[in-house]
Image (tube, rainbow, N blue to C red; front, side, top):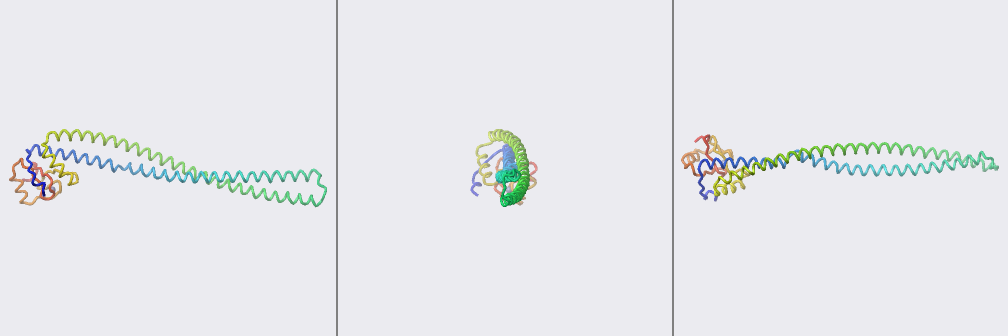
Amino acid sequence: MGARDVLVKATPDVQQRLLELQAVDTAMAQLAHRRRTLPDLATIAEAAQRLGALSNDGVRAQTEIGDLDREQRRLELDVDQVRARSERDEQRLVSGAVGSPKELERLQHEVQSLARRQGELEDQVLELMERRETADAVMQDINRSVERATAEGDEATARRDAAFAEISTALSDDAVERGRLIETLPADLVALYERIRAGSGGTGAAALRQRRCEGCRMELANTDMNRARSAPPDEVLRCEECGRILVRTPESGL
Ligand SMILES: [Zn+2]
């Protein structure tokens, strides 16, 4: 690998500080990951989606209520007309003004048929009122669901905001710590570290602990262990497996 050509030297304490920098970078990556994957984000999105669907349901229910009300008013007008006509007929019947038996019979017949018609219309009004009650119940159900989804969304938003604030504070603290560490590290080491880190999932430097590279978790072969043992302390080693900067520690097993 080309990076191997870069000869970087750093004293053991500088190499230790590189591990501190790596720890800060790992912590920052974890904070960013936590911010991206907060369960509250899914809850908020889900609540918003539910509210969208409920809004459509609400429009539909409201339209049905409007239609039923209009239909009921129309039927009630019909009932009023039939009733008025029936009253007029009754008055004529009792007034004695109608002398012709044929006309009397016609009026009586009409009164009967108007009464039937009125009964039918009143039944329809009753049926409409029942449908109106059902529609009202549906609307109340929707309103309760809206309240619930709104509350859940609001609570999740408050939790998200609190978590974001906390993460943001931690990230700022880490950024300060990162800047402080970078200032104490040689530029060529930092450049090498950054280049490896960018290509290795965020880990540029790893400790050698109990013969194992903590970057890739692989145990070093005997030849590599011998090389790590005999290399000058200020030589910056690289893991043969993963290419990461390998920092020797008192627990390396050398
Ligand atoms: Zn490795």
